[in-house]
Image 1: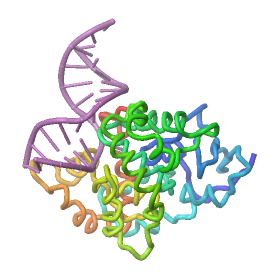
Image 2: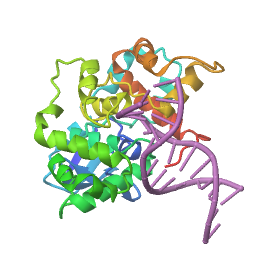
Image 3: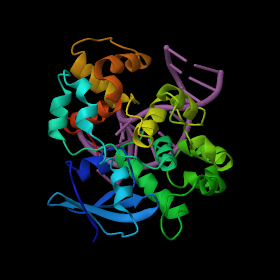
Image 4: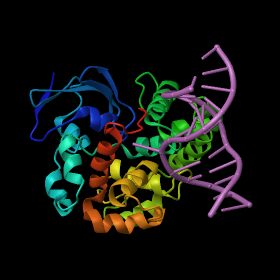
Length: 278
DNA sequence: TGGCAGGGGTTGA
DNA sequence: TCAACCCCTGCC
């Protein structure tokens, strides 16, 4: 079994099951089975070593996927004065940002609206089972475009099937639309993704954060709104409108605000007493 | 066991 | 600005 010595803490449960990716399951305690770049793999951490069972997967790809090369502490230096982030980081020091495959990430989040993590995971599993071939790979845009809306509804996508089918069709014809130049600012990249059906401000930013390594993408959903109100504007009835969180987060957290959000979000959602249904 | 409320958004009017 | 869109889960 290949192994990699870890130089940073790595918490596979919060990283893989926390809502960044939806193709992972804890198949036995501490052991997580899923896919990386089309390769099925089981991961586990033992004695500060990352172990995996698929020799076709290089250490480099794993490091890349789990952002093990990233110095999170340095990136989060501008947030040192924040009253909550140090607590969140301390609670989950091994939570890493993922670099998920852009297409799978986009498709997952198109399926995510008004869905809970467990349901999104079920949809991912059904899409793989119905359209992913013998390897159960995540189906390509071509495959989902060919399947069409009606077949996608069989995967319990509901109204989201229409959006996913339409986006798959566009990307099957124009795959280059997922290639986002590094020189584009995140705002421009988000607008670009929002041209696709079913992609709004929340989803574009999730994809930029979890698949493109845009650490300044700051997705705002009901949980984040709840968290920000509760922690930063306690007792205030009306605070900021959805669009205003962008500027506020920039001021509060700086250029790594997406990473700050990832930690705060996970900590807040899993804290005792949170209404979390996973 | 069955009914009900509500959930990690986007679209189009 | 707001209703409509589907379906699943938890709760009573």
